[in-house]
Length: 194
Image (cartoon, rainbow, N blue to C red):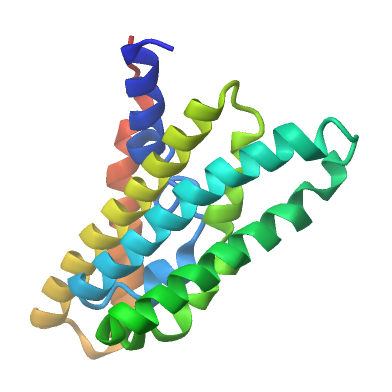
């Protein structure tokens, strides 16, 4: 695996195939936790950790356990159990060492367990050739999620400060902003490395 293939995989996960703004996965925490950049950053860090670790663990479980024993049909169940365990670990860690962030994230932290972006990364990783590719893709997909939610939180903060018509306050303005941000990310679709 050379430098350009790693760079291509990383840029693909972060920009070209961004899970939130291009593939529209993980929208619930994207809309729910993006009101302030501080909570968006905290959620992004949690998602990066969970995506990276779940990519590594699920790749190994799939490669060493499910495929050799012909249990590929159990991938979704096994992967959700692994992700749930990792999210519980993150939740306990945040509750003990970062209580303000834990309270700010609220219900959205346990929702990482059922976040389709995290499950999507683990399922895509089953098609990658090596363990290193799976871990890099998982980490970069988490970075892409964090980039998207941080950009969106800044845009939402700016929109809140501006005078928007009463009918567009709150979620309507957020959805319009998200759509415009998604259009901007669609511009990366023609990008290729190497």
